[in-house]
Image 1 (tube, rainbow, N blue to C red):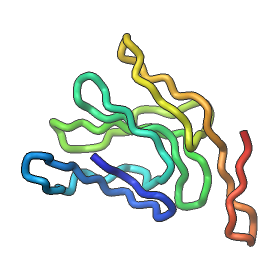
Image 2 (cartoon, rainbow, N blue to C red):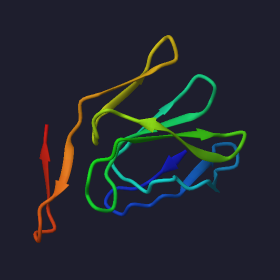
Image 3 (tube, rainbow, N blue to C red):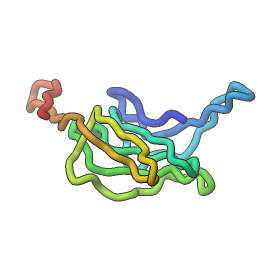
Length: 116
């Protein structure tokens, strides 16, 4: 599965079938984003955390892809907005999200700055 993009804020998702070598459109994210982190969960669902929105602001939102329902569901907000971070599936099924940056757009400059 791929979702989002880098610097183009695509909200759609696609699923790859290695048997047929084809891509199929899947549900769109609730929040278009880039620089997010996806984690495959033990039940086959996919957890998306953070990223940057169209305003170049880091987001706190997370989403869960429910394959059976073929939809993305909001799944809460992190305490800190993050982008370019790590996320790992822990043995107990929880996802640890750590590190990253808080991106902001510099007024009138069209550039990004980052703070840790």
